[in-house]
Structures are given as C-alpha cells and as structure tokens.
Length: 83
Ligand SMILES: [Zn+2]
Image (cartoon, rainbow, N blue to C red; front, side, top):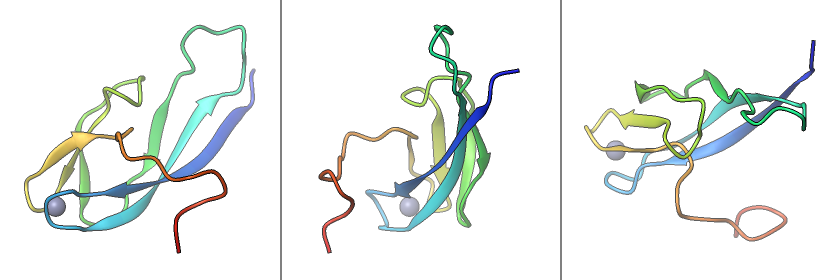
C-alpha cells in the first residue's frame, strides 16, 4: 500500500471571514493519475457540501451559507502566510 501524504490547508470564507485548518490526505504514489485526495477533518464551522477526489472540485460550505472550492484561488507566498 502506498503511504498517505497528510497535510493541512487553511480554509477561508470570503463572505464572513471565518477560517480554519482542514486536515487532508493524498496517496503519495506518483504512478497514480488520481492522487486519491480526501479531507479527513473539517474545521469548526465548515462542512462538506460535495466531496470529490479533486481538491479543485471538492466543495466546502461555511456556516454562513457560502459554498466554495477546497482549493481556492487565493495563494499564499512561498514560506507561508503573510504575517
Ligand atoms: Zn462564511
């Protein structure tokens, strides 16, 4: 079995500003076309609207009703978030 690559990603609602860190994992196997992405844990206030094994299509719902993709278009610079 391939090892699972685990990481956390910051979710941020563009509507109400709520944010939190979701725990996600992917198969760490470059031979696979599909990395088998899945979200293992959602931060408080967020829920899964539509699961997908593609993080760009995995839809998250904020408690305020805003729905957005897990992989958002906002990027942080290399090295982490701006302080
Ligand atoms: Zn919100």
